[in-house]
Image (cartoon, rainbow, N blue to C red; front, top):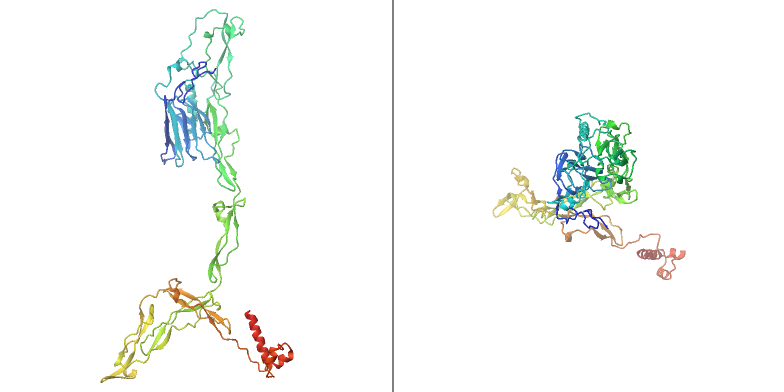
Length: 624
């Protein structure tokens, strides 16, 4: 049969989550929360207070950061990560329980640090965060008992030295031990240069718990057998203050021969008291921390680790000054590292053709970052300083230029007499012309051409007629008017020579005009040379839509666009007449019909007819 938590054989009682033997989990409550405060100052910041009697303690950083958790007692004694010294992950005693300090792997894990303990605590503990970067959040949780947690039944069956609610009580530190710890902490902070004292066994007085009554010694009797101390247990540690207990055996009072314990009265057997032993400090050692993340994600980088000189004393690990570890070779604090081989740049294509047929343009090529496995990866995987250019300028040489012209205006500048019609002329790059690579030259086409809408009637003196309509429907144009020297006669006007009015100021006969912006208009080049001299060829010109500022536009009316290609030289080709090639006979047509032109005699005698047939046949074959 099994033994329950109440030490009764056959009992089925177990300790609940509140630590109560036979409890129903209602005698305690769960306290939990998340510390998310934004901190500004570097250093220690208090997160949460763990009360006395707390169990199932869990303090966890919600994600990995450069911050550290720290734990100390209300009396100010550091338990984990105190005095700016970072402890290694492990188990640390404090507050009457054992805390497990975890720090996941810095490279492969994203989890944060944590403190875990079963409890219960026998004093108030404070949890701190050593703040170095933004707080990712600290989750805390523990269980505290309610009223009447320890049942009277459990107390009645509890033997001296047994666990109370599943936890052994931990004796407080002696005054001598606290003094050693205090002096060591002083040496770390620079307040004192004290060292570990060498203490001899027996300096620590036996510790007796306050709640334990001294054993009542029965009256000394003259018995044949009694209890005798024959030695001590082996010291629990080889250095740094351990503990040992006296060993009592039942012996014959006269011969001192050891006999079975049944010969002695068990009620008179002395209770072994703990004694301190091996009080001298343990040799200092180098405490090696974990490597940091590699400084480079690929290629050769650096990683660091913390190396501390530490010393064990009274089951505690203290950080001491480094000279105490001079007898040991100090491990390296930095090392080279390489997570993987870096990716490299690869040029995947040749340069494209230039973006323009003439002048300065650009060309491109495909450049990719490729891993050592041959996969295309993000550009950030490669060294951006070594990236080959994937775009560059290209110079295709000077561009050919041509004169671009609009059609002549429909209106003459004068309603009668001599006037002009106008057109716009601009020199621009020509992408289809076969002209030499040079400018438009000095042969600028004329922008005006004369026009005449019949003679005007005579006027008086300097007679100025009305202004004609503007020579253009839009944009800049000219207006004309007739100015003549006349003499008014009775009912008539006589026109005089202009010199007759030379002493008078002559009114202007022309002025500029501007009705409205033209917007976009069609411009075109001159026609190219015909592709054939006979039997139908074609000629081309370039047509562009330009705005008022002579830039390319799409606002021209498509139905008004001038033709870019037209037929030319549609007449038949006339062979040249050779005076030496004539028909010598009138019936050469019979020679042709009989297909005798293949013979030299007939080809000479009927030269004209045979040549005409040969040209007709070659033209037919060419058209096929």
